[in-house]
Length: 500
Length: 52
Image 1 (cartoon, rainbow over the protein chains, first blue to last red):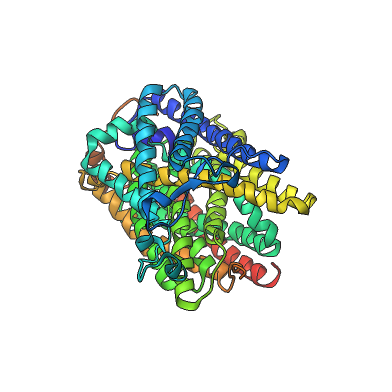
Image 2 (cartoon, rainbow over the protein chains, first blue to last red):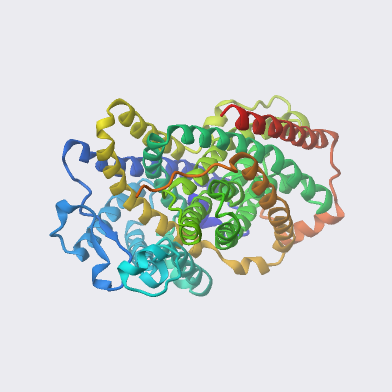
């Protein structure tokens, strides 16, 4: 989505120059996510050398008394007042993001103002979502001295952030415009995914066999997603809705694969005009929010006995990286809370979200390959262009680079743990600190997705027919086939349980 | 990519009257891809259940 996200609300085609700029920014933002994520990851690893470089950052507990909610993450900084700890987290992120976005040539002053608002609103939502009456699970109620709670865990802060973003995006257009420079859901979520790699590396260290199974099944599931989703959506768009090839291919990729990135890659592969993937992308973002608000709760209700099926389902059914991984995070929290309340089973956190992320990441890996195949079919068979050759290097050009950061953090943690098992507790503590920043990036992603989701577009002239295909295919086919495939590959597999 | 800025609503309406029929190569792409998906699904499910 990246810079394209800022163009999603337009219906006119950008000029070729603008389209090139969007493509270049996409690439740069992907690399920025890698460097920011690796920077936070590297600082967190300082614990291995006895230095605590991130322990000052803020953590938020489930609270009944607001003044006791915030605290520094590490005991080394126990004397640091909580508001200072929060301010330090804000300034740290502001500085590294300012350095990063400087390369995108954005207006730094506007970014700083926008980011300040995004951070404050997002963290306020997290704080509110951590209120015991909203967040506490049944086992925590006696300690918190409360008789009831909504049992939503503190991840309900994500939903609150999304709702806050939707209010801004749909009812306060002036505010949304003022925040525009800092509303970058793809940059935030990709950075979070890079950090998440290390966190999942810990999970893999502790449960190697289960992690191997999850990765293998993740690969299988995504191949199926490409081969079973895409042709059916393309056929329905062409045969029953009468779309031209130029519209049907990006639409099929947008609905079937990975939303915005796939629609843009396909549009470019078949030489569609820029307006086509941009219109498709608008729909992808809007319906991702609908899925994000519905599917995790459906999964909690119907799939709490099959947590990893639920995780894979989020990765296969929810489009855009941000919404898919975010759905995985909410599903993780909701299902763990329900399993604990209903059957007393305490699953380890992170596994459900890990499956969603694994599936989504593998889907992203194949976007370039799929775009290459379509480019070849279009140029060689459908719209023959004499002398034109599709270059293999285009697969790399379309490869989502942030995945390299995710794989790197995953493998580094795995390698350290395998090589020096005695360091595992320290690596775990390091990743716990990095994970606090992952949560903040997640929060800002939710808020930013809400701000960018302009539901009024659905009523715009002309988009109704596109939306009709989207609704039919997404809710009538993709979601159910995604559930079936997730069930086939993941049923019977359970995350490890917490000890004690 | 063209510089022309299309009016999306008008263009989508026009598509209904100027339908581009499915070419044989498109039908092949659809059916081969779907067929490969179903066959691979069966193979991968078996592998994942028995070997991994």
